[in-house]
Length: 490
Image (cartoon, rainbow, N blue to C red):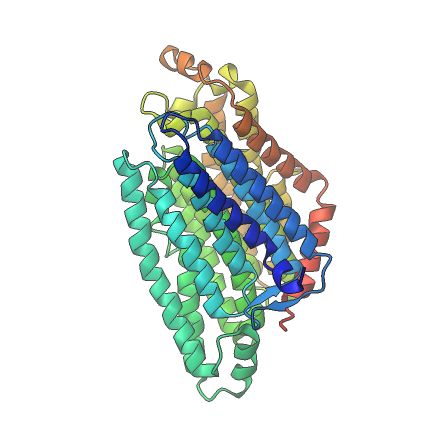
């Protein structure tokens, strides 16, 4: 097998899995369960992760005329995306299997295709390939956000996401055009070399600004976050767990390539932009989360705040910031995907109005009725706070250390203040979990049976949160290896 095929093997596994699911789904009777298709998609995801690990043992290099670059950096994010994808698929196997959603198998295919686009983004070596991966991912995610067509909230969330996402994509495309005009290239290495001889430095700075605007939308960074609460509230819970983690991992990988490889000559400008985005995201996310009663909206604003924490590390112009960004991305994926998997377990299939839990007060008594589920959700919330011996603590420690070593003391102080603010709304939900349950809710909470696939998803996330907090050596080593190769373009 040639290296060219090996360098796109993870993406091929996902595409083949998605196509196979789409071919089998129409052959099944309408009343037949689609659970088997979910397990098939999960198997394709595991095969993709195995293919990514295989890429660690082949020489780093490019493929398809330099548009794809595979190295330890791309492999790291491939593994993160594969892990999130697996948790999402396991969460959804029983979620849509209640007869209220037709053609539920299409959900699994769309999720595989969305992840394919994200993987292409992380291994892209030029801006046009980033755009192609971004569109593949976005179009599939727009459909997934409105997958429950019988729900007006779901349809509204998909429409908002599509309209604002298209608007942000226009900024990104215009930034690519300006970058080509200023440097004569769209490849990362070509842009870096072109900047050294460019006669239009202001045009290059404008290109960088527009590109960052388009990508800031995808990571829900303030002030480009306005879509996030409504979309998270209306979209199906497994979809929210997916779109709040995997696309962000892909975009953070692209931001590293752009800031450190394509536009290193404009590092002082990009650092200032990241400083502003980080502070705005942290305060906007945490202060708005304090006002929320709906748990999904609260976690939406929490996601905005965590984007700010990660962006704080980008203010460090040296390569030492890359490994902390990689580690925190993996930690955030584990704890946030786990939190939404727990919400899916608590809400039941398809979130029927009679059983869905949305308001914080509706979680009262969960610990007494379903102690294991409450304990898992508590673990994820404590990790999101940044409690020691969890993934969230080490993640924040690394990104704030990177910012501090770069001389951004006030940014670190503001980050720690925001971590304190975040404790209020996370602990409010934790307090509700261990409060007595009203008699009207006790039977509902007790009546939700544990499901095998979702239990497996929760177990994987809980294990990841604990391992990243207690024994992070292997992930740290892989993140350091990713950082060492991320600055090399061929």
